[in-house]
Image 1 (cartoon, one colour):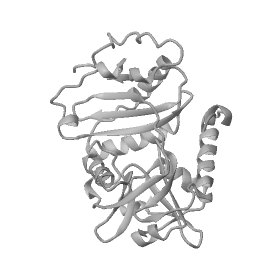
Image 2: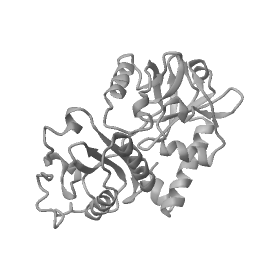
Image 3: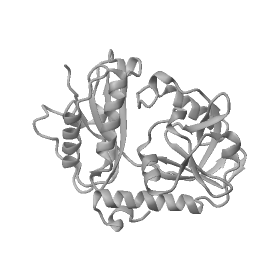
Length: 293
């Protein structure tokens, strides 16, 4: 099998680490266990991960060089790979992540894991993004049952939905079924607060992803899993999104429904609950984790 190329060398020794604070513009990566600069790495053009989106991925939030809920992400990756009939080299991935952070140091960043049908094992770092309160547009779609619960590379439909929303002046698509049930945003779980004050989220049976950040909210707060229709979303008191990269993100607008002064009080409770989970799991001080945020 061809290995990753570029500055990787033989893989027996990692490349020289950046001086001082690592510059993520270098895009450090591990390709098939070989440390390199992702901008110079290659995969074969005949890999079906590229040609057909046939593969699996996970996205992990990392704080001070510590991947958060890595075990849960790898558990879900194994489930996705079982669905796709794709090998999942978990021990190799765990070693790749460890070596990658040994190279770049204790930085806070995002980590992407990709497995392709062609047998590539790819792990690389990405700079975190800013997530202002979201403006959401309804986009009609139907979950594909054969891929239900799988986090596959076949994301063209999700990204098209986002572009359709952007064409109308919104940030992201809030996906709805043809009969008007709200499911999720392309890359995050939806939570909404009813006029009576109940915190709710659609159940997994609606074809949504079993989001790990969603699980944290369910663990830490009282949440009612119930079907959400467009009228419920538009009539909500407040709403927020939960996902790895965005953590907890307030919603500012759903179609022509604008929420007052997001984040609302329940959204702030969810932010605090998420942060407590990170602090408890990683054993890091809040000042270290949330400085400047």
